[in-house]
Length: 219
Image (cartoon, rainbow, N blue to C red):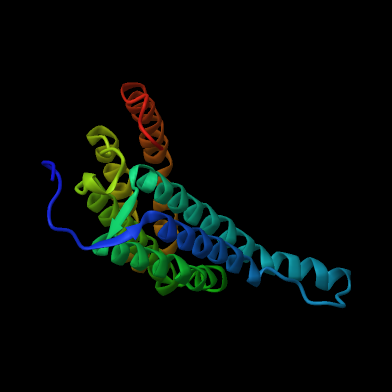
């Protein structure tokens, strides 16, 4: 038993959890598009009106697709160093997937009632909850180096934690802000664009440096 090992609640290989995760992410992304449709048999005027009416659904779909895709990418980065999982990782992973699978509901609320504070608050809260769960999962993996073929490098983990914490903070602040101004809350989400750009570039540099330092690490 090395210095990192301890009594563990082993659940086996991470492969099965990753396979389930990919399936849930794919289904959630697909369900987002179900509300994008036009009625049959429209005349020219009706078609133009229906097209205008469906655009909020398209916008909400695009936003949620980007959000889920970002969480999917982060999920795979978390498990890049993981070979085995224990009970804590499984529980956090399943909680994260449950929130991802629920995402089509707040997306529909945002598309259909995007001018109401309750809809914007629910959407913001859903994304904040997903971010908080993935943040907890990142920390759990970081603090369990015995589950991987190599420990998650501390600089990489800290950058990932900062990236997810920024998501949680911005969307959590948007929840009460939505009751002051739904439009202002949605504009507030854009604060994440420069933040994500910075943490994304830094994350790439840190991961490249980690690969250079560990050329023989098993993926």
